[in-house]
Image (cartoon, rainbow, N blue to C red; front, side):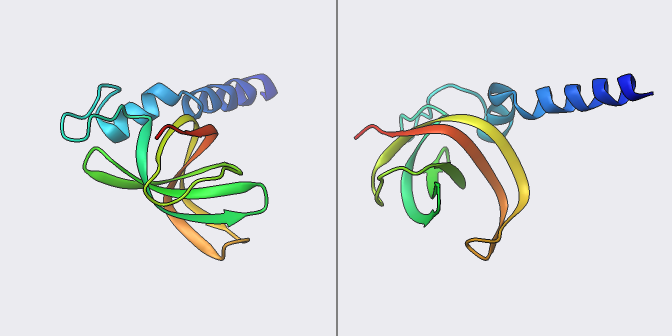
Length: 114
């Protein structure tokens, strides 16, 4: 029985960590948006929140707004950021920020590309 539970957990883990599939579902694919000219893994910073070890960024891209959490990054509103997605979480509660995000993308890295 333990092996089948491990196999199920491993399969779910792989599905959660597949960045291209999760991001494609949310943004309509990896192609650049005709209106903004941004790839799906980029966005314009609308706001930021800092917490120990993380920078939370609200980004705008492809007709939508979304939040990412990256390792501490120096960024300000108006910057254009490229990120490498790692994990999407729904109803994530940050005890440090005392806030619940409907959906947030945890990323391995975020780079300002102005």
